[in-house]
Image (tube, rainbow over all chains, first blue to last red; front, side, top):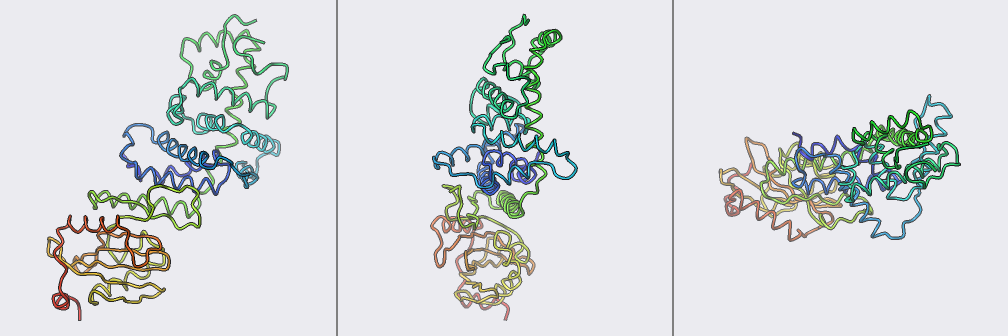
Length: 176
Length: 242
């Protein structure tokens, strides 16, 4: 079984991806990742062997981010939004149509409220289960599900992937 | 027409593979005849694919060298701290970035515990430039009496604090390496003609001053190796290389 410090290095790309999705800025994301790693090493004893390392790390990182947001109540404009969009798009042979879609999706993601974006990323990108996501965010699993459903409908609306605007997104259960 | 009442969260759980078997079966049956239900479900499948498609490639982006190095160093330090330093508290120095956005309450002024052969690892938690000076440091430790400031290349100063013997009788020296932006207090012991660093505490911009917590760490370490009293100048002279 690898120790926390050993796992950290291998997990950096994931951690950084999650950080970028939270901060929407690479520079901030890198600082956040670094600090999260420091925390993780200091708190290595609190990691339960056999439990999910990714969820544990995401939680540390995300808590630091929340602390930061609280301290910084008035968040300034995110300077490298453009850059974030560009890099998250595959280059080279990707068809220009696909590229447009991805740009649109990334832009839409940035527009989502913080709490929706983070559940979306944890579940759909990092592929955590609802339960693990709930643990990372310290919220009930029901809240994970309602936020995630809202996030996806918002995203669908923003990107226009929905099938026909006639359907109301607020309908719950059954058919409108 | 929908006979079953499937809410959004149920549809989403199905798309995410989180729906229990019984409900999944009912939903599948309903989907066969209910196009509207299928459309609602498709939103959840598609949104997942879209987000994954947009964000997943980020993982291929190279981790910046500075970040990678820094975390590797932390991991190395933590490992050597664990195996060799027993109960000594090991904290990383604050990385020297101009402004940290995440002001950590911890790690305010100290530091790291490292061990290893001077020639190779004394610089591990210092600036890369220090690596070059390890051989010089070893020479100074071999020859120079305590209490002196010795100028090394690259604007560094080595101050040898004291000599003593550990419980095995090995000669050990405590010294401080002062650099432009940080200073490191180390304890190295000679084993088979090689200086092996036992402990190194770096603090940023702490010229002529060791934080109290660092001093405590040093004292705790000295106690743990049952360090003898500092050698007198005469005793020291008799041991050091001419």
